[in-house]
Image 1 (cartoon, helix red, strand yellow):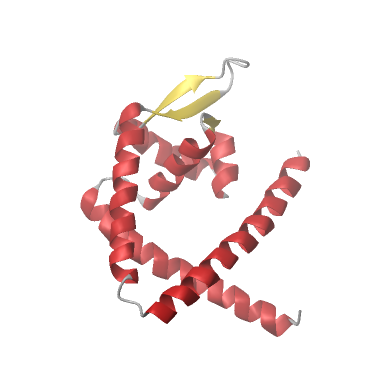
Image 2 (tube, one colour):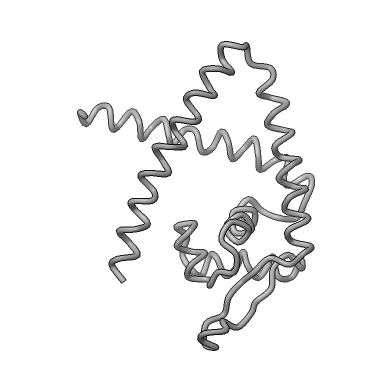
Length: 156
């Protein structure tokens, strides 16, 4: 692949994030006090269960101090709790509360409906193109990010 193609792909991917963030962030802020970062943390906890602060940071590629601020806000709202690791009491894990799981699912559904209301405005051809492109993009990014995460975890 030529450098030019890689540059264009990088620009396209970097342009997608703000568009999605804007379409999700605004409705999120009107429905909840949870920030997009909080939603990312809650999604990681829902998907993987109990995680340490370091593991959350690795999942989201965020520094631990940033994760700490987000988690502290989620704790204040009653969405997550700190728990000692049963195998090593020095490690503090974070897990979703029942309230956190319920509210997360409700907010996620609201955001999904908001996004769907915009997607139905696309033509049938545009929907087909976006379906194909988004599935392919997801598959490729998962394979690249999985390789990246595996590489970084082996470097411990």
